[in-house]
Amino acid sequence: MTKFESNVKLVAASQEAVFEKLSNPANLEKVKDRLPADKVKNLSFDAESITVEVDPVGKISLQLVEKEPCKCIKYGTTSSPLPFNLWIQLLPVTENECKMKLTIGMELNPFMKAMVQKPLQDGVEKMAEMLAMVQY
Image (cartoon, rainbow, N blue to C red; front, side, top):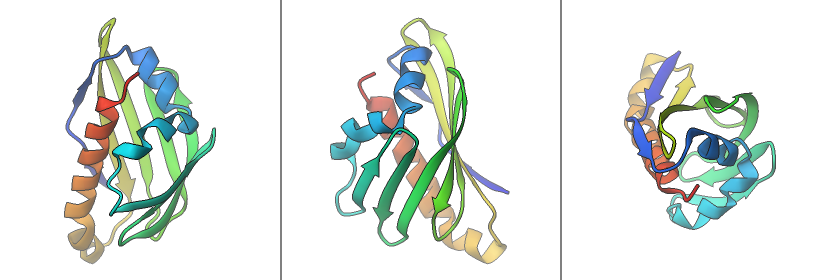
């Protein structure tokens, strides 16, 4: 499995507050306006899943597959040109700060890895930056 990891981001909120918000995809409705409109279209959420169209990739649907309270949230694709998993890991720093890291894991052959490595690394980094700026 190939993994793409974001840098660790410092979030100005407790680990519990961040977990509560990110473990329910419906809460992500509030970050919709921060996404690049030229790249992300038709974003929709419910309590268990996220669906989005990303240029030039196409439609991607993520389903919440596992929650480890306050530590880790795992999503898996139910619809995607390239199936992958997304992990959001949280670690406490203080009562009002935590660290967050995003990881995308997917099976890639060497040819596909060469094609998608840079856009996926950039994407996971931008996603982590955006989630670190959310008001928790």
